[in-house]
Image (cartoon, rainbow, N blue to C red; front, side):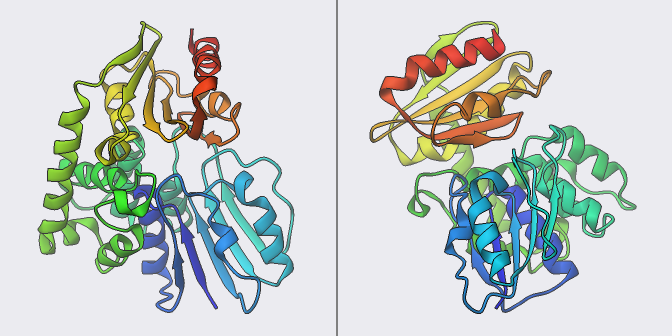
Amino acid sequence: MDYDVFNGDADGICALIQLRLHDARPDAILITGVKRDIQLLERVPSDSVGRVTALDISFDKNRDDVCRLTEAGAELFFCDHHYAGNVPMTANLDTLISPASDVCTSALVNGRLRGAFAEWAAVGCFGDNLDTTADIIIGNLSTAVDRDALKRLGVCVNYNAYGSQPADLHFHPAALFQRMQQYASPSALLEDDADLLATLTRAYDSDMHAAISAPRVIDESELVIVALPDAPWARRVSGVYGNELANKSPDTAHAVLTDVAGGYLVSVRAPLTNRTGADEVCRQFESGGGRAAAAGINLLPEGDLGRFIDACRAQYG
């Protein structure tokens, strides 16, 4: 049995689209969820497992299940750009992992496939706020594309993945992947299925407009922390609003706190001019993780807010 396990954001979806356009596995079981649902390999059973593809989820958070599945005989391909920690050397484990701040999983897959489906890689990069990397990929294309449309698609698909549960999302990531992967390129998708981007754009614009009035807990030259309420729209913009703030103030670190039961959902964005340290800040807390440029904490207890602010100031002050 084949399993495709992937982060539900633009990067995870676009990475898998590239791989399945290259090597179709129509019977593969899809395992995905909201963006912060990253310990996905635990859902793959040990019995009758054959090939497993894991994309855009932390190796560090899934290491035990990687070992379990490879010991059960699975052939596992693991591609990611988050902090990995120790990666075991196992014959049936193929890893493509880089924590470099200018790459994402879609970009890594694009390299593995020698640019075969580079438009999809660019969409994944735009979704991860890696505009420079996306532009380099687009610059290597042999035909012209609508850059703004590709960027909008990446941003909106990425936005769709944020939420505490699938009910917060406009499309379940598995359904969104299935809808998008029918097309050899995002340009073909946008020409044939314009309603998808229109639907996501309307929702994105509405939620981002609501976020404009969010109060600032910290408003300093080196660090801005914004607070959002406990509401589905706030959970949906928790990451993309951080990207928007970072793009507007590239020399400043940003954090977005979203109220949830028992504490806060946290998104951290390092300054665009210094894409480091976000993962180091978030890994100081139990449910934290991510990459150097962008990281998060699934649940920051209310009592740890002061310690979190201190950690941000120590990193970026």
